[in-house]
Image (cartoon, rainbow over all chains, first blue to last red; front, side, top):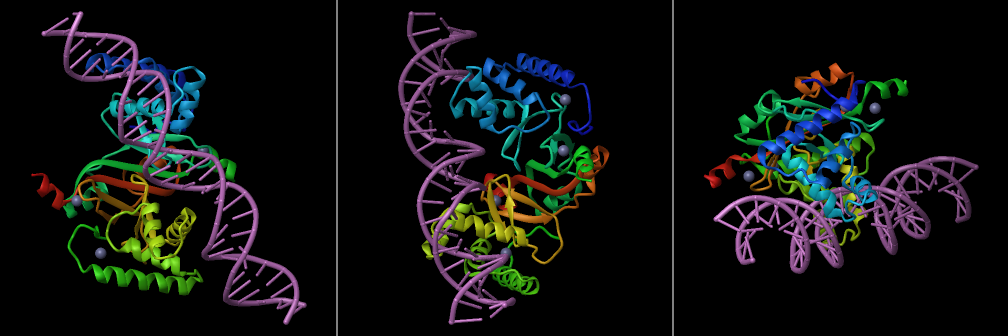
Length: 159
Length: 159
DNA sequence: TAGGGCTTGATATGTTATAACATCCAGCTT
DNA sequence: AAGCTGGATGTTATAACATATCAAGCCCTA
Ligand SMILES: [Zn+2]
Ligand SMILES: [Zn+2]
Ligand SMILES: [Zn+2]
Ligand SMILES: [Zn+2]
């Protein structure tokens, strides 16, 4: 699975494709992609970067979709639980899933220069983390894997 | 490097050894392990679990070492920058380094049952995260690797 | 048409983190 | 000794992130 976020790409396709996958998944499972939830996903999808809950709320509020924090947090909670979005723990912020539909364990590359975030994936059971967990008798239920650094564009800018 | 935190061990040795390594490192580099900083490290070292900044502040306050948030955040900032403590991003909390002195990239196993945290390590450049970063042309400066789940004791309790 | 379950509205509050500015103090300079 | 300097601390205020709670509405279905 490639890292999606830094490379130039047909982003309009990203957006359309993710939205239609989300709709299909909701239709299949009975989840309800209500107007606020759908719009929240669109807003997160606009760019490959993470948005704070209050940034999201600001946009929703400007469109008359709700003005109080619970509006944003409920929508985000739904999107995260449905697998349509992920929380970036290092930023306390949220990003639309770039691999919607694929069964995956997300991992993120976070650029400190331009704040863009690329999503890739990992295998928790493999690698040194899995080894350590097995050795300690620890059962992994969820992993947080995030790398901070500089994307290719920002490396050029720095030089 | 083993995962330190779940196994029964001579914890008093943990504490003494970490404190003396921290003192030595400060003596070597000119960093100042002031009373508040030293006491903050001791408080974090008391258990292999993460403490919120305000939990730490509460203890410091009860000992007359300061009552306002910046007291705790400054001490934590020093400890983290010096490598004496790490922030657990998934918990917004802080833990003393269990491998002080060793050159390492920390990774954590976080038990949702008893809140204990074991520290192990990873190699950012290796593994799938490193592969993805290289493929994307991304330069990693810092990684966050955390696993949530159940420690051996809490698995027994659950069964 | 009544009930149950999910969704939304609204108010308040809890939790985590930093900005900004004043003061202190040790070590060095003149 | 007086003055400077840089790091550390004191103090106040606020920013930023997140949740508890209860009321009201909506949708399905029995
Ligand atoms: Zn895209
Ligand atoms: Zn960048
Ligand atoms: Zn120990
Ligand atoms: Zn446990």
